[in-house]
Image (cartoon, rainbow, N blue to C red; front, side, top):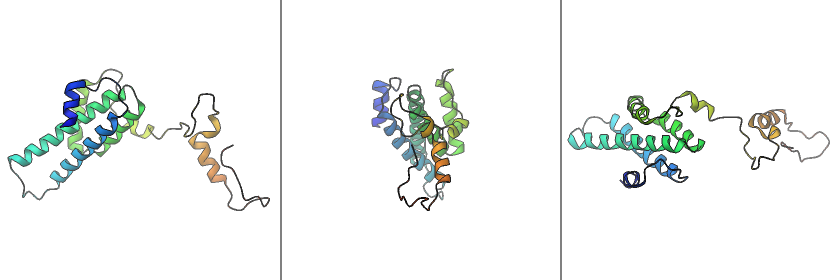
Length: 163
């Protein structure tokens, strides 16, 4: 409910670094509710049950829309959106995608292929642009781990992975 009030008052168009956490938490709770309703044995059918499922789907759509709009400002929020979409049931994902395509601009990409691109070669511990990034790329660190020997060559027990 609080998320809906925030959306009505402020919208999601302006960048807010903290809203992604709240969108992710509320969205995942709603996803769990829809998954629990889908696995129900049918004993709780009725108007109230359908209203709860509809409310959860509405929350999922609202959270996905917020992640999409925040993703226009931050790659982190794009990553959250792709991971969130992967967690949604396939039947609900079609509904979410239909609503996202209604608000998506030409620059927004809502595609499952980008989920694999989150595991990129970006350096993990580079803070400044002036830092050397070639030796700190994820591929180089993994290559160093593969080449790492467990026995020290010259009796020196300290070895460095990253120079």
